[in-house]
Image (tube, rainbow, N blue to C red; front, side, top):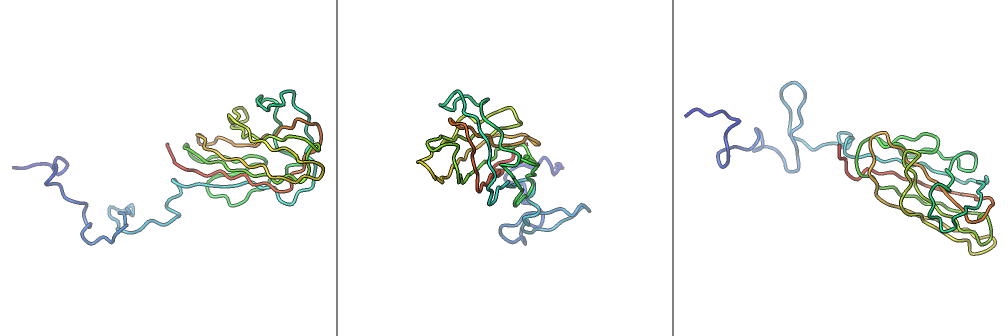
Length: 202
């Protein structure tokens, strides 16, 4: 009886051609000319499933002025100030897929990303000031929760750290916003914001 190869079902269907001589943990890679080889993938061939990049502030001494927010519980995202300009001199670092522009990281693919950030504060807006941080997507959507640190007194130098998962579309931007319950100057000595693709969905 004649049957089309595409219609063969278990238990008669066979493994892919060449599988009997393929080494363990290899995949079939086509060469575009109607054939291919069994081999391990290289990292460069995984571009579409991995991406990361960071923006950093290094050894900064410039002030970032903040005005005290009316809602000192930091529950009103619109009162936050975008970290940008002379007091937040971001630069790119270790980009692979993710791109950087001035004060933002840009997602290359649609998927689930992890955002990690730390900020070394060398000077607070006031001796008892609280400083909060959120992330901002596409300039309009704020993270649901802030991370907050409080100065322990004159000369306090503390770290503000946050992380979380977020869903982004290709081309979406991620920025950092901050707020203070005291008017004054914030000095961010060092900062690192890292965006890492966890799972591509489109």
